[in-house]
Length: 88
Image 1: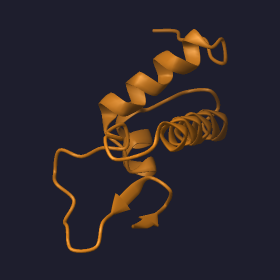
Image 2: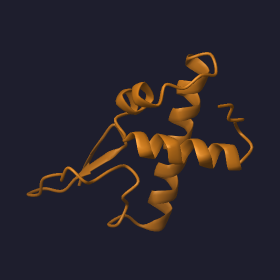
Image 3: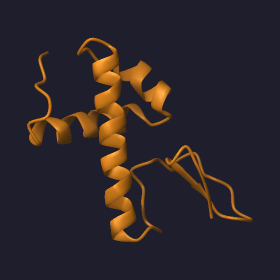
């Protein structure tokens, strides 16, 4: 398998489907899925810091190449871990 940007996995002879997302780790070993989750959390945190503590969900998703639902899920995880505070 060839990885690009650490977020997408492509198998030789297969094409990525429209429904696949960074959060869909069916074919990965559990420790790799955990590392990808951690990497995505760090990327979202980096986005937050670079944007003065504010998040534009659509812009963040586009910049990181993930879905808006993935960004929202990651924000919830970061909040649950006490790394961010969410103000609405």
